[in-house]
Length: 140
Image (cartoon, rainbow, N blue to C red; front, side):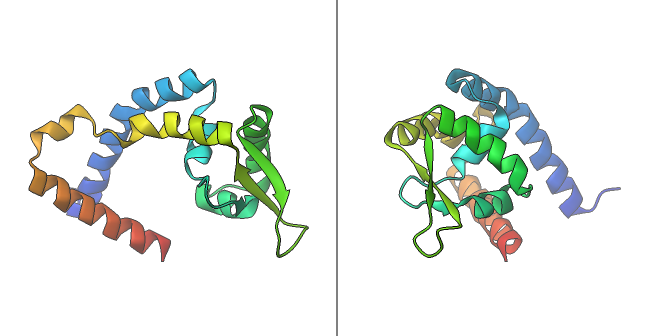
C-alpha cells in the first residue's frame, strides 16, 4: 500500500503524463523538441541567466544545455552574451522573437486542464498552495 505522499506523487505523475500530448503539440507548433521547450520556459526574457543556471534548473550537464541553446539560438530565440561580472560566463538573453515564441509556448501550459473543472475554486487554491510549498521545499 502506498503512503499518502507516494500516492499523491503517483497522481501528479499520471496527470502530467495525460497532459503531455498537449505539451507535445505546443512544441511541434514551434518546431521544437520537448526538452528545448522545457528549457525555453525556464528562461525569463527580462533576466538573462548563465547557461550553468539553466543546466542546474533542468538537472542536466552543461554539454546537453549547449545543444539545446544551439537550437534556440539557430531560431533567433536567444543570444549568448558574456556576463557583466565575468566575461568567461555565458548568459542567455531571450530575444524579442524569443519572447514572443516563449509566450506562445507558455500559453497552453498556463491553462488548466479540463479535469480541473471537477474542482471548485477553494480546491484550486488549496492545490496551488500545496504545490508551491512543495516546490519551495525542493528549491531549498
